[in-house]
Image 1 (cartoon, rainbow, N blue to C red):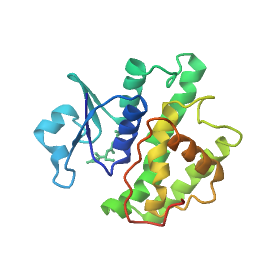
Image 2 (image 1 turned 120 degrees about the horizontal axis):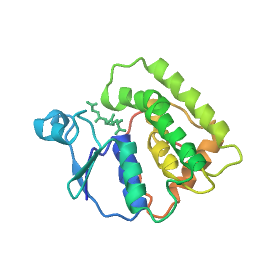
Image 3 (image 1 turned 90 degrees about the horizontal axis):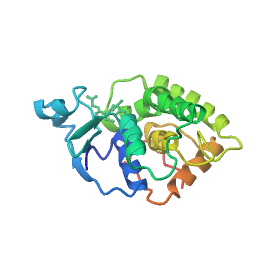
Length: 205
Ligand SMILES: N[C@@H](CCC(=O)N[C@@H](CS)C(=O)NCC(=O)O)C(=O)O
């Protein structure tokens, strides 16, 4: 199994984290985003969107981080990372949508400004990040995991960009439920950290 990724990409970390939680030993192939390798004809054959991550499972090519989580959960998960029952599956999908929506346009975008120099309005994306963090904090009130009584791919999908939100100058110190949940994810067997950068505001311990 191969994962085309970039070490500073939270979408890539999402896939890398789940592979590690499942104990799957994948080859990590770094795609040189700075050199435009993700827009090369070879890479575009793997993912016409020209984005990392992409999973190659013995020739089965899966682009998109959330699609990779679903694929791995269906194919390899021994625990219930993606419930089969309609209500449980919908509860997980709800957060995959948030990860691809509000998280991408909030804390992920805020970090793109500081880490990669993206030309977004920093104030606007930071404000969006706080809106979604406040909602997630409220959802986590009295719960341990986002979508079930146990960890699911919803937790994996949300983790990376929330953990590194301070790099985008998003102060998450007020979101106590979120911070406790991040620690629970980090305590899962097989957890692998998302590489830190020196930008933004100092992270909580
Ligand atoms: N929906 C995609 C988004 C992936 C994404 O935005 N990847 C970024 C790195 S974090 C990328 O490759 N950006 C390069 C580009 O879009 O040109 C996923 O979940 O995998």
